[in-house]
Length: 549
Ligand code: MFK
Image (cartoon, rainbow, N blue to C red):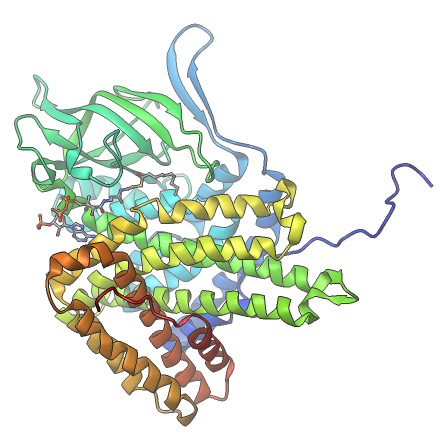
């Protein structure tokens, strides 16, 4: 026997399979088939199927081949010139092209799709994200910038940037950064230290250190700075647009101090920048900067949630395939009752998370391009922080559990699985931690109240007609009935409980939306959503008790 021949059984590696047609992707397909008119969906299925095939096939293989590459910063040329060049990984360079060609941002703004634009856009993103090494991060910020520039009433900036942000031509497509975090922190943005002053030509120039700027190679950025003389706090900030590089590609009064040495998302060139009088343009006035950038935050938080669900799905697909291929104790893992139940638990969590997410995306489409009423807009304001914080936590826990389902192999770097766990950990930090989003939930409740959300949830349950769901609906209704009691009393007393409250509202949203989906498909002879809804309710639906509640 040659020394190179295997000494024992070789394990066939797990494959994620086709991202669109995969049996594990039933929920996204079921949701779209219920919510999008069939003739419109029929036009989009081929592109979703193509993206799913690529993402589970060629792109996945490229991602594994690219595993050890990371972006590199070269600060100086050989001859002493400060150049601050960032070399991206090969997969990232391709991911930019694919994002443009498949309309990852543009689809969300396609007026011909009406209120379905967001669902169809995020279905594409769902396929694209798992094999593109967090290129979804610059796309999220690009989408947020497009939202702001579409609505800000600044025709000059909109005319200049929107055709690029919404382009499907890779040569013309621009991405946007969102430079918000400073050394004082990513949460308390009102303490931003960057100062904006006019130069002798009347041009605004920004000076300060931006501590985390994800996707530092983007063509534009939106950022916050305090016009000189403005008061402290978030109201004294202004929102600025800037183009980091001039037409020759040189940074304009900006230095890249370093690339961040992160736990995960290492393909993403997150940089620390020094702005030394960088030229910039106010987007919409010279105050209330946090309120001005909030629409971007709400869009990037939605992308965060799509990323959470898409990466959970990838982890589940790999774990499911492995369970079919891996033999232990005389049988494939998939036939061992406890292993099977563990994967079913994960699927139930994923289905509820995805239902809460897709309901929010659906509503976002209605609010942006449909005929929303005030209750829709109000419910969206509350749902956005809920799905951001809830899906992120589910993804961190779920991907960790999925990794364990591979035993020791899940702990080995060149399987590609550890990267998944490191990457998902960012989802509960990026765009606001769980606590910041819990406090945003209280802010949203103070602004719009609980009624719009509650009416929506009760409306979903009222719509459930299938007798097989009666007991489940009754239980959910009782739990919904407790919500107003949690909110009665002193709002200040609620602050330390905000996380428990937000997680409860998130779980209720997922459960109710899953029951409504189950009702729809049961009426059409498909009982899979019902089985998963029951599993979720039995397994996870122990609401966190509120102290004194
Ligand atoms: C993908 C890979 C990434 C790689 C690594 C990254 C590592 C992490 C890098 C980071 O640092 S990510 C962190 C990014 N930062 C954030 O997401 C911000 C987190 N903080 C918050 O969200 C705070 O809640 C906030 C800064 C918004 C608090 O601001 P304030 O000024 O202290 O609160 P205030 O006064 O309640 O809100 C100011 C205004 O904004 C109000 O409007 P008005 O001026 O009209 O009264 C609010 O209503 C409005 N507002 C705040 N949040 C809003 C909102 N409006 C709509 N939607 C929201 N979500």
